Length: 281
Ligand code: DGL
Image (cartoon, rainbow, N blue to C red):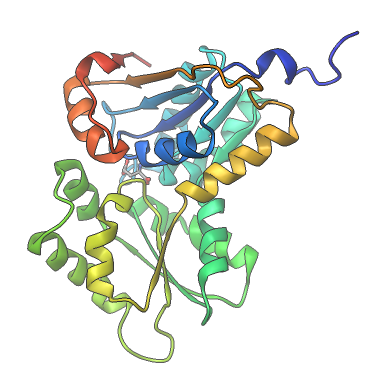
């Protein structure tokens, strides 16, 4: 007797592929590993070409297809696009090129978390320039609840701060104030929810929260994305049934030492250069 689903059964033990423009997506990987402790993962950070957030749509789509091809060659059973910028522009191209591989982005889950959190129907989104200008979060939120008021702002310096490991203190707070004061100006439409629409921003969450005070709910897409992946694996019969020792492979397109040093901040656990394989796309 053969399995009815060609993508289930023998694929269960295969790894889930995750890619980002760099180390920021390790915040998503961390949530995925916590939610899916029996699954193996292969993570690719395109560190040679970071940032994606300032590049054109065409370039980000091309880079995303190359990242995915590297992971597909490693026999992944599902692909998570951990990068918000890539999720905003490349999902369709990835799904088309690699069908029937399930491809999950972080943007729709982030939008869902924001819509669930807001009480007054006013949401602020902070992200990279590419994500904000492309309007993908604005569209995803409006599709879920069209009457929501959405304000968005690019915060490129947050990416640099996170990469530098500067996640708290007066410099971070003063930059956060400069970016956020206008978005959260007092008044009737003041957002009550903030979406961290970039992989790098969750490590700055405490500093951002201290600037905003206690009245704003901060959401990011990592844990909601992990829930989506969990449900998708189950629905497709792709969950690893054995609580086997899961494998983790870390790939980067440049700089294993830097990946390990900065990546430790994002993954919440120390890494060494030996943990990272450098690959060419
Ligand atoms: N990974 C990107 C994102 O989530 C942030 C860094 C970059 O610009 O590449 O949008």
